[in-house]
Length: 137
Image (cartoon, rainbow, N blue to C red; front, side):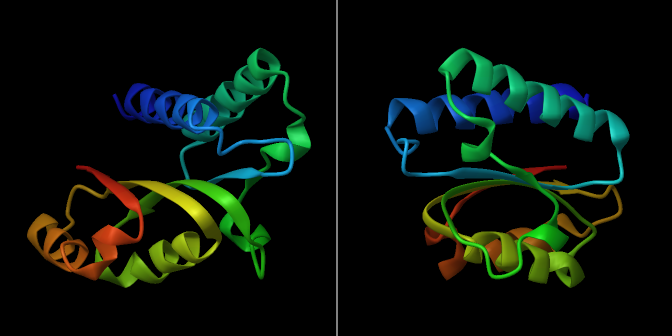
C-alpha cells in the first residue's frame, strides 16, 4: 500500500544521501511531509528515527517538518513527501523545492481523481531538472 511505498522511497533516499556524502556533519537533510494520513506520518517518524540511530547522526541534523514550519528555511538536502489533488497544489511543490540548496527529491502522491496527464505534462518541462520527482498514483 501507500505506507509501504513511501517507506521504501524514504529508505532509498536517506541511504542515497548517506552514500553520496550529502549528509556531512555540517549539512542537514529535511524530511518534509504533507499528509492527513496518521499512519504515514507515524511511519515517516519511525523510519527517520531508525535512520538517525543507525547512522549515528543527531536528530537536529534531520528535522521532520510540516510545510508551515519551513518558512524562510533552507537546507542542503530536502526529501519531500507531498499529497496532491492536481495543479492547484503545485505551489506546495515549488515551496518544497525552494527549500533545497543542493539536492531535492520529492514523492508526489496523487489523489485518485487527479488528472495524471495534466500533472505529468506540467512536470515534463524545466521543472524536471530541478528535483528528482516521482509520481505515485
